[in-house]
Image (tube, rainbow, N blue to C red; front, side, top):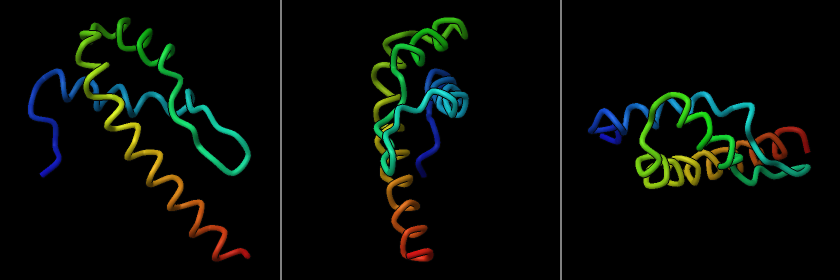
Length: 79
């Protein structure tokens, strides 16, 4: 249903999976990925910058939403 539909989409999805070490966060909250690092990594992988700029923020927003959801569940279970 939400699977990437293009080669560039798959490349950006793969890039998102590689960004786990590039998360910007403060205690108790994830702010997003370091987009400078994401663009540099994407460029090194040969992914068109326009594809990264169009697709990665959408994936990032969902990652943030799901992470916040999980943090809330963890607080409920340990609070």
